[in-house]
Length: 412
Image (cartoon, rainbow, N blue to C red; front, side):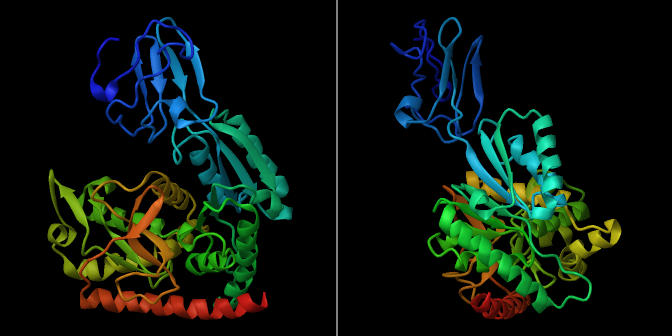
């Protein structure tokens, strides 16, 4: 066997076929291979590996890998079982931007096959048929099956991931309590369906507003699924905050990290950059140090992020869709693959056990790090008086929403 570098070691035995004598096994157990899904090529010999695989695919017990011989060595494709993903509100504008990104591998990886389940209300099924046709016409190699439905027992069956986009929108003249009441009914039903039909390991992401409280209701209605498996989307606000800092400094959004969205996905949210860093001309510095404009950071910056959704609606006459879909992809991808070392993200999660004085049993946005599909609070960040006031204000709003929603939950 010809020697290659340890991190790119590959079996080059002339033995053909799926390994009667070493032709298949790339000896993956020698050193840790990079945990990226990529193909390593040596002439016409290649193998692709799933993210995280560290051993021979036969030893890993991955299902249905395909092996083909091309001269010396083997081509190994390790796609495994498809991930089953539900998107609700699937005929809507957010889903229209979201589904293509998921289906082409932007979220679960470029070598991970998928089954997409699309749920919407019965009057939208004709529109949903058009969405299915478009997905088929994209000819996406990862997309094994698309299942459109208006039935919860079909939609929630054996799910790996549920992305709950659909909700009752606020109509003109509707009081907030009326909006909460309508959505309690929806998310109680969907939570119960998750509890009855989905895998107990399912990851649930709630997007439909009011997202935090809808997520809490879904979780309470699915007692057999761990509360930690439920999260709501504040990544859009997180991305908006990063973008505003980047625009102010003339850098890219990737140069900004560790902004925080505390609290509710509403106008009371608190975009916090006290712990954020930015790369300016190759040097990483604090955002306050880089911008040198405390009044902007404590004033217009916060208001811009808090009111960005309303500004988009005013300009487009429609709510955010493209940016919301991108944020959903970011959120789910981080759950699936983890956060980069030294970085944290914002996510609405159950507040139980937090060290920041936020009351328990709220679905509150915190800074989190994620590893092995499990999130943890970022601990030990100092909180100044300005931040404390903002964090308490948004917690108060969430506590009031919860109180109202729980009253409706008992009668729904």
